[in-house]
Image 1 (cartoon, helix red, strand yellow):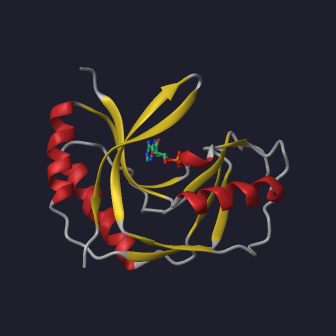
Image 2 (image 1 turned 90 degrees about the vertical axis):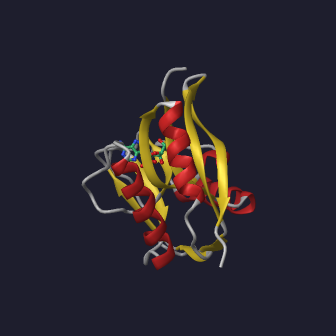
Image 3 (image 1 turned 60 degrees about the vertical axis):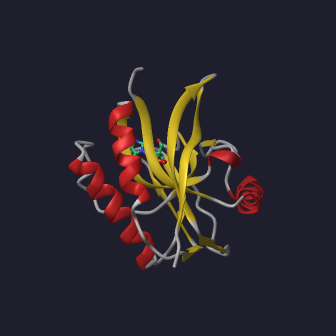
Length: 175
Ligand code: 2AM
């Protein structure tokens, strides 16, 4: 089987996905960028790239041994990265639990030979893609909050001209 493009991430609760896309419809100009579908809204913890099944299994086993408590995630910040063309939402202050979880997964990935970005972890939920021109950003009068109780390994598939993220396996965070 060929290598699959994988990443570890956090799913947003469905009601929050729906609230965000409703808010997004009124918050940006129609030509600001290509909106991601509700079901694709997620926060990436560690990007793995193209991974063989054997390596994916080893990384899953390591992920399953992580012991960490749930944490509260506030989504109260937004930004625009013109070069990759992304408009995103995220936390103004990343919770310690989120940073710890991403650090562990990123170092396990690096040890398994999955090249990791040299940039610090910047937690974000991509909202619009192909946003390479200046974007009028909405005022930050929004705030979503949820408790992160699981994280998952995702397969990133290119289907019918767009990316789809399929959860392969997920693990609970337990106190
Ligand atoms: P993005 O939303 O900022 O593009 C699946 O592709 C997920 O992995 C997306 O959340 C994407 O982040 C992230 N991703 C894709 N390519 C990446 C890379 N080379 N380095 C880090 N993250 C990447």
